[in-house]
Length: 589
Ligand code: ADP
Ligand code: MG
Image (cartoon, rainbow, N blue to C red; front, side, top):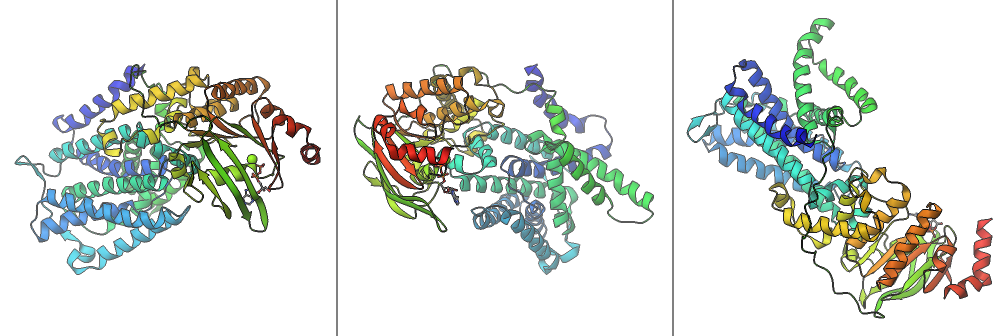
């Protein structure tokens, strides 16, 4: 069955590249040219919207940059179209960097709104500049030549358009299956987990936004030499929405969905443009209404897009286990047993009037297992988030091996060797367990997007997967390696989070309620893993609501209530303390 996947791409590529040589009508070639051009833009949106969860309505404007740059340079200055390609792509990158830098640090709706403004502004510019020909645009764009051969606007150009589109698809497929690709796929589930793995989520958002802009600009460059004229209409906001529609319809998040979406939209659009005015008895762009309705229906009944119907019939690609004997990833020098590691000094967190953490202090030395317990709402998770940099401190200080880390971003704290899990499991549900754990190896590897697209990252990938598999074996989860993380029960998911944290090669591991919601058997398995880590000399801070669970594990217990440290001592002392008992009894029943 895997053969279906292996041969699908080469066969499809061969078909598309050979199509012009086959006795097909010119009209087909023209349609296919459009589909290739649209698919390039939609591909960028698949990465941006489908994978990274960012929305852009402004892709048509990036297409316009590519098209206008080459039209202006070749028509007005008789420059080489290849030089124009470089400049057009360069301009698109600059525009995307500026737009992205301004909006991507902010959450939510800023990017979509900014891309709308950008699309409108650029279109207005094109339509009102004398030197860009205003609404008439620029005419007489030359055809492209490759090795002295005139590609024309039909069969010859088809080969170039599809060669570029197929290479882009291949590059994106490679990218998604790589170290930077997993970082991009992690963006969908929020930034907290990715940042805790040492990933700069801002950088990857910017990267995807720039990549989508580049694909759009290349499409625009081809478009100008295909149409041999440019005017503002094809780069208007409406077209930007149509590109988004293609990506959503075809299969948001799936590379080949971009091609399917582009084909379906292009082919039905032509039919509707003829059919609808005849039915309605008036001329107009009525197809927009139909697309609007279809979009709602698709979002409701096939939220994964049309491609999901095809991919459901294909076997899920399975990573071949090819990493045996891969050299280990670099590891950090471990602190000596007993060396002072973490010093939490009077940390304080206020949420408005609520003091969630009230000047709490404690210390962890290398090899310590410290339990942080207390009733619900005591401030344990908040303390945890202060230590790991998820929340900024209101006051106080956190030191790590003598160095102040209070107020540092969580990904920088992670680089010091502090790794954590979350009270509510944070994972990429549609990645395999192995891939999720490999995210933990992010900081110990280096391949970037270009290396990944060119598949120059395979040796490092093997090292990453060998490490991920080792950590999965450590928590007893090897058998679920190829399972999608979202399909696991809560118990194995929590163990997967521990494996991911271990994959960062931590000097201190912080676990936030690892036993919460687990069944008895799962709790036992977890306790066994933690005992084993303790035996290996791992330092642990264990937040737990369940007192029984920590008693057998921890060397020392810190008890919190209402944000304040109630006591610190051995498990026996904590159990004997009337104050602790009162705190638990007071809130429990
Ligand atoms: P625990 O983990 O011990 O159950 P938390 O640290 O989650 O407790 O919460 C401590 C207190 O701080 C609770 O009263 C909670 O409602 C409050 N709190 C936690 N996070 C926030 C937040 N982001 N905004 C406002 N209040 C919060
Ligand atoms: Mg909590």
